[in-house]
Figure 1 (cartoon, rainbow, N blue to C red):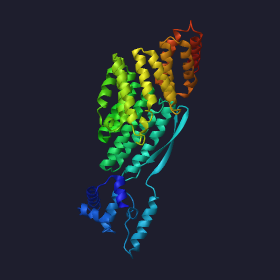
Figure 2: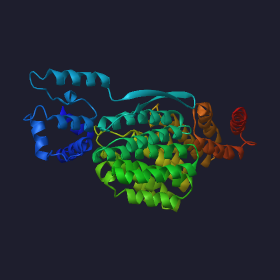
Figure 3: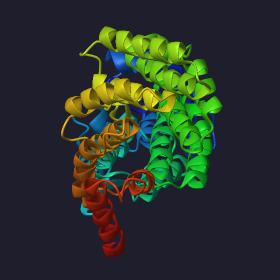
Figure 4: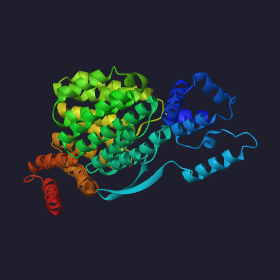
Amino acid sequence: MLAAAMDEFGVTRAHLAEMVNAAVAHRTGEPGDASERWVYYLLSGAIRWPRHRHRLAIEDVFGVSILDLGFVPPAGVHRHRRRLDRERAALGGSAVDRRQFLITAGSAAVAIALPDFTGRVRLGRSDVERLREPLARLVALDDRQGGATLAPVATAMVQQIEAALARCQVADPVRRAMYSLAGEYLASAGWFAIDADDLPAASRYLDHALRASVIGRDAMVQAQIWNAMAWRADQANDHGEVLAIAQSALVSTASRRDPRVAALWHGWSAQGHAWAGYKRLSERSIGRAQEALDRADAGTPTPPWLAFLDHSEIHAQAAGSQLVLGDYAVAQSAASAAVRGTPDRYLRNRVSRQMRLAQAYLGQREVEPAADVASIVLDRAGDLRSGRLARRQRSLFDQFAAWESDVPAAAVWTQRYRAQVQAS
């Protein structure tokens, strides 16, 4: 059990010896004499019942009874067992007191369990996982309805992480994991702000995320942050920065390790090349994105933020690039494939891709099929909480308005749009 506790808290033999000596010195005012070899004897069972001051020091280090760490008092030492059993009972069996928070997000309510670290001595790996639990639910909610209301939730989790780090003792591996997790939440907050069409807030979150990722040293978290940075630059119409981020990220550790990440950056490169007017480079990048995705191992665990990346996403990136280049027939084909391949749980992505398909039809002056597709967008508008898509919908209205007096389908669509805007 001691070995499991050391692994949980990221404590090495040498580190445990140092902490025991520090605890002894704090209690007695005298230096401790624990060593790495002494810890080995504890782990091997050669020492089954440490000396009194060492027992107290070990309990101080881990914040649990010595009995919980697998140590057994010698026969006849009943007074120690009775004392330790009383301490064990006083601990209540769990070092974490879960508090439930109900957070309203658009049309849904999400129950978030925040671990309460009050009175805790040390943070471990399981604490990192407890703090990570809400992240997948936030990402899933974003996928369904958009992230316009979710950034405060993510930043509340970051505050919880930072408060725990300030209060508790943490070994270096666990500290890095906590900072890495803070980077994940902050990158998500940055994306949620982008989807809310709040780019200044997104920049603040992403700057904070970069600082956390430096300490966490997690290549996949850095890829998540760079992806959000590319989105921020794209929404700010800084397409040169998008291409610069993508080209730099393609040689990153995460891209070399995971073909899905490489596919993501090839997709971003395609869009950057399209805005620069380089059709062949853009199409070559899309081809490389598809090839990279084909190499991905389906058995590799996927972080929540990257779960959206499939072939339908690459088709959507291809459609976006071809719209920029003005090749509307190719854009229509790619957007149709993107819509067909979008899983049902990605409602926001499906609506976004239907907008691209409508734009491709309009680019070919096929207004009626464009209106048919765009009517689906209006049908689902009430389910979404995305300022970014609301802005794109206004742009789509401007395109239909140009046909309003000539094509009845365009007039019907614009009238429906105006009615929805007034109702909201």
